[in-house]
Image 1 (spheres, rainbow over the protein chains, first blue to last red):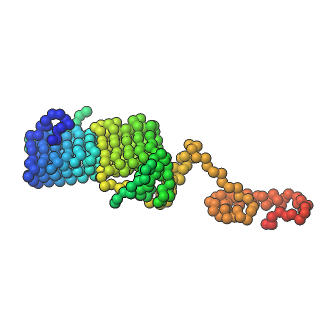
Image 2: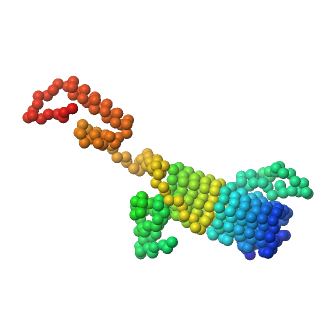
Image 3: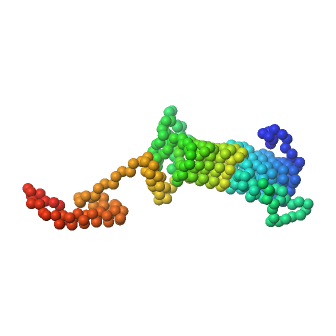
Amino acid sequence: MIDKNSGKTADFTTVIGADAVFKGELSFDKGVRVDGRVEGKISTKGSLAISQAGKLEADVNAGAIVVEGSIKGNITASDRIELRQSARLEGDIKASKLIVTEGATFQGHCSVGPNAAGAAPAASAAPAAGNRMAGKQEMPRK
Amino acid sequence: MVAKPTPAGTRAVLCHHCNRQIDVSVGAMTVNCRHCNRRVVLEDLKIKAYHAAVRVETAGKIEVLRKAHVVAEIRGNVLDVLGKVKGKMTCVGPIHLGKKAETEGDISCRSMVVEAGATLEGFVRIDPAFTPQADSGTSEDDGLLREDAAELTRTGEIQPTPAPRIGDDGEDEEVESLLRPEVRKKTARKKAARKKAKKKAPRKSPAAGTDDKAE
């Protein structure tokens, strides 16, 4: 169970099943839980959870990320990234908070702190109403 | 690789120079590695304030307390970081970063626990099969050891041994040849000055056939 520590049920509007394989760019507004395999890019404003069976070969951009499976790619979170015991991560991390549980495996560049979140491309920069503003990002106001 | 069983009253420790297992007494503070014959520090270190060095290494536990600020390469068996660290961190065992920890530098370890609120910047490698690199023992390392020794001498922890006086004996010529060129020039000048002074001074009447040394 992914949310045993938070004490409240996560808002996982979208669930990618264990037998699903996606290749491409995926964008969501709310929470996503990945039990299957995704290749490409994932961006969401809400939280993203990769379950133990989940395998990602993608760059991820989300509000909060909880990893219990395997990821090959860069992950960026505006809030926090949590690597659980069974997490396997190969890629760079950018987040304002990082929680690593003993047993997690990680290899890559790490940039964690309140400034790192500002430097990371915000999740709200995802295309809104069909308009894509490539290369232009809104920095969150302090 | 099967670890050798350790006899009672001893503990197994990994030498941080050659990465080989050595059995040491439980209460030992330092030991000479029987494989590479280099000094291995075994005691746990607690850093409470600002500390800048080339390297801080031990085969025990290193604790960087909350108000501490370490600027050094850190290597230990267990690392517990509650303060600031600027430098590479290598750990055979687990690394724990507290919520106020701030690290800047590469981290390599077998397992890591990071609390929410910690700040990290650098390349991180968490791998249960990680084995730290053994010291190559190159001239670069000698330079590091020399710097550490100089620092310890400055703080008064180690008293420098006085250099041997160079006399006019022939056997001192061997020692002279080992000296640095500046020191050799200085001693040569002193010798020349002594010879001049002997020439100017009136000769004493020889007593019982004893003579000064020939030139």
